[in-house]
Every structure is written in C-alpha cells, then in structure tokens.
Image (cartoon, rainbow, N blue to C red):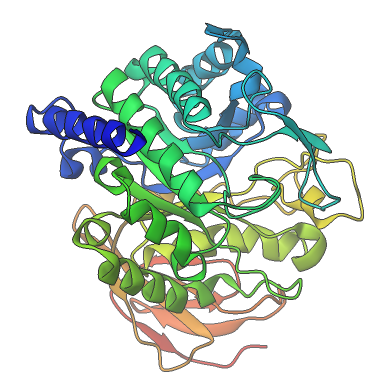
Length: 416
C-alpha cells in the first residue's frame, strides 16, 4: 500500500513537471546565489551589522527558520520573526538563503543530545522520521515558500544531516532523502519560481557519499536546483588552508558526475565554511574570508557562505565561539578589507595563472573587458611577504589577496 502511494505521488510530480508548473533546472539554477554570502544568527544581528555586510559588496546572507519556533500549534504558523528579518534585509538590499530545519515536538519526541562543542542545546525534537512527520514538515516548508515567494528566497532543506547533533540520535541518509523529496516538491508547488538546495552536509560530497546516493534513489534530485555542502574538512581538530579545497572540489565533482546524469547537471554550492580566530588568529581569519571564496571559485564552486558574521557563543575556550569576523559585542577583530571586497566581488573569473611556485597564488579576472590579476601568498603567516610584478607594476604580496590591472604575474624577489 505504501509503495503504491509513493508511486502515485511520483506520477503526480512528474505530471506537474511536464506541464511546466515550475522552472526548468537551468532556469532555476540561474537564479541561485553566486559570489560570497555570510551566515548570520537572526537573534544576534542588528541593522548596523546588515549595513556593514552590504557595504562589503556581499549580496546575500544565510539564516534559518526553525520549524518549532514558527508552528507552535498544529497548522498554525507565527511568521512575525521571519517577517521582521526579511523586511530588515530588504531595506539594505540583501538576499536570503534560508535553512528550513529543526524537529517539532508537536509531531516527534524530544531527545537528549550528547555533549558536543557544536551543540547549542541539550534537548531537541527528533527530526521527521515517519511519513506523517515528513508531511507535516512539507506543509511548513510550503507555507514558508508561499509567504516569501516574492522575496526570491533560496531554500536549503535542513543543516548538516550527516551530523548526530543536527539529525539525532544518528544520521539516516534514506530518511533525510525522503524528507527532501517531500519538502522540495511542496516548495515548488507553493512557489514555482523558488530555488531549492540540499543536502547541506557537514562534509563535501565525496566524504558523505551515502547522502548523495540516497538522494539519487528518490525523486529529490529531479526537484533540486543545486547541491550544497560544507567545506570545513576538519580532521584531528585541524583544518587545512583554503587553497587545499581545490583538489577535494574536483574529487567531489567527479563523484557527482558519475553518480547520475541529473547529479552531473546540478551545481555545487559551499553553503558554510569558516575558520575560528582563536585557532588561526584574527589576521589570518580576515585573509581567509577572501581566500575561501577564491579557492572555491577557481575550482568550480560559484557560491561560498562564510560562517559567520558575528561570534554567537559565550564560551571562550570553545573554538565554535570564535568563527565570527566581528566579536559578539560588534567590535571588529582584524576585520575584512572594506576596500578589497567591493572590487573583488564584481570581477568575473577567467582562469588560474601559473606562477611556477605553489606559494604564489594568482587568478585572472575581467571587469568590463579589462583584465585584472588577483594574487596572494598561500600562507597563514601575516608577516610573510614577497615582491612581484603585475602588469608592469611592482607589488608586495602577502596573505591578503591583491588586485592589479594586468594579465600576468612575475616574481621579482623573495621577500620575507
């Protein structure tokens, strides 16, 4: 009986697609965010924060709508919080990538979370596990999509379902894929122009293959407009530098290309990545903001979301408390370069430039037909420099990217 019901649902969605009820994959993919975004905690962000983010040239922020905070009685939704934040974003011209997530105690039992530095709570509602729970979540997702259809929101279904903190008590790839299938189709039925992402895994696709296998076995991939994942790659408490992601992005892209023709057609987005200032230092953290974006862009990932704008925990010894570019009180750390980013984010990437030295990273860009080189040193040492020449102009390179007109780079000295 359950199998026949699922077949009827699949047929219904297929008929809607044939009738053109929502955008084709190519059309929707063209509406996905590109460039650099910033993750924010809604409860911790004021108007001045949003204005500072926009002044950097950043076009969108990633934030979450918690199911249990909105649906507090069955079928009754309180949108006052999201409404207010959407309105604030509109005032400064920032777009939204919105995570739909959390369990809801109206539909699923409460669970105790084990101690973990990444956990903000000790007790949460279980993620949707039954068909009835998935249907309830899909109704919530559809209601959100319908309400904010005019705002051009990109929806991301759940956050890090491959983590037991976000999918307790243990990750279940098949259950998650069924949730994505139900929620994505519900979103598209409610808001045909909406773009939808998943699975937002804590690991890149080739490191979390089961989640992508499970998505490919359902109707989820046919509905999604992009595949999201997080780029941390922490092993043994150590995270490699931003440039090391290039090889792993290539491996993940190859895995997806082999997975299915549909997976091959979907773009990859890095919807969370950052470095805590308590580990790498404030100066290196500020440099890594640009370098995470550039490393992804040069290896085929056109959108990167930095985690996060402002420190959002009060646990000094926990690295999770120090991912913000600014402190919890709003004071800047080293801070992003306010002159660099508005220029950098309007350049169109062309190709990587060979420098003959792995220390020296250089990319070629264009802006209105004019070529520019963006170059930096692959180092975490803020004091390290090297003399080079770009477009006939002498320049001292450091760990923060430099932009100069030209189409080639030549090393003129070793610096220090």
